[in-house]
Image (cartoon, rainbow, N blue to C red; front, side):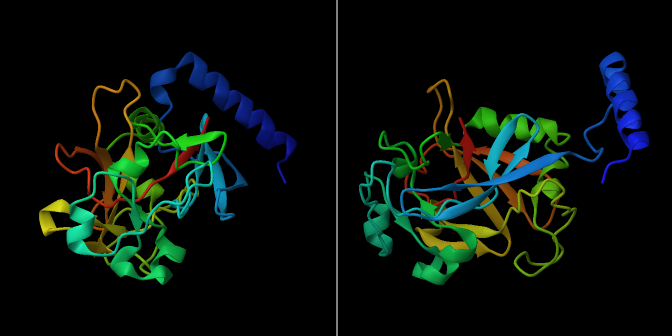
Length: 235
């Protein structure tokens, strides 16, 4: 329970931040709030408020768009690579992986007007990820602050992992075009789709790796059929 002295100290610190903004660093402890949200499939996700944003604290695993329409599951390598419409798959085509890491979606599913996100939510935009990254201190350190700690899911060294905001980033791997749409990188890293608010650029992905504490934004010019994870943000 917070004491009166603690509250007084908090107000003093807040005042110092307002007056001396440059002296307040984002490596200080971050206050968060938690909750839940339910998707069109009935899956219930933990949520966490980080700064001004509320994020899912788990990767998306829906098999339906917001309106209830089914998202096709595509397992074959050739079939996946030939897609021009929305689809999902489970890592290694194993449903047990979806329970832990969520499902993998191609760009067409992410960019669908029927929407992957629950009502009142949206697939995280480039700007959403950028805001989160800046709030946590920038590209060099934000990844570590988002990663689940330990090596139960992440392979060693899981460098810099603190999960200090309850985001619980897990290394769900993906289904990548350079590897002929084979599954790879589970345990080593995770990549999430993002949509650009301006509509000028698509196919941005944000990734975190076991080998470092950084987060990186990548632009995949020809990766519409990559299978990546998705996080959603409250509108």
